[in-house]
Length: 366
Image 1: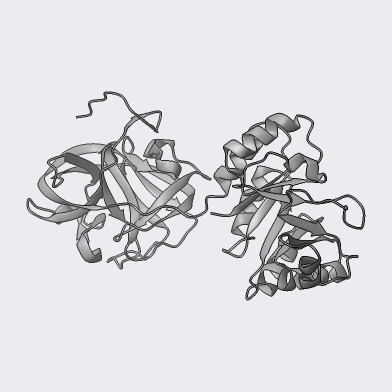
Image 2: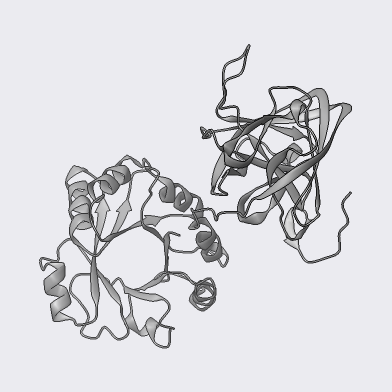
């Protein structure tokens, strides 16, 4: 989870944005007036970013004060003069000297707030690298939620947080959602194969991602929303063709796969830029981006299995030896060689679905 700061200094509808930000449990609220912090809960950091130079006489409920580059005192000196308050430094990066200032602030201050004027993220990469061993937090100003998502992923690690001045109600909610960069682990189960059936021709989807999969990774696919099988990526050698470690030959186009926030999508819905969840045999997950989806007519095989709780699971795959699923310990199992009694890995989402979203309602799939 990355840090989220909401800047209310120039907000037209300050009251509504403030209410939304508190409801979404953002990490910090930024204002140029300490009076805005009166009555706010202790769960949110109150960040004072005063106008001009110098500090106001009264800091009120302020937790963090952001000072400009013209402040000569060290963070230790500032903290000693204002008990109970932390200090951060703001730097606007426009050239090489200001980039060096930002690197120095990130290395020395508990908080550094940086605004990059150029659209390139190269200066941000430099500051992140310069502060790699520092203990402070780097907060980067984002102009919108889309830029915030990019900032969170720069150099894989991203900035520690983002400050955003919402343009409308809803931006704080979107920023909070974008800050969740770690995907939660899933409790995989061992499924026992009960039957395989050749079901004739149909369309299957290969999901080509913008990411290299590991050998024990794939995506979850199933005919029903409450039962999925872990389909392995093409990271393992095959005769007659090179490996394609970015690809999962996933299944028939009607199948569900798991996306962000426990949402499901049909394989037929995926397209360039879609997000899916990569899962390894221990249930660890990460969000990956789809580069393209290849849908072609192929012979299909249906794999039926049962979970320890008796729940039936089905997966329809391309009927070919090189299409594989994962078993316990990362065992790679060829779909056409599966037989009753074999064990494969799967996942059992608990909720029914409506347009892919979990919902508590009656729904029968068979």
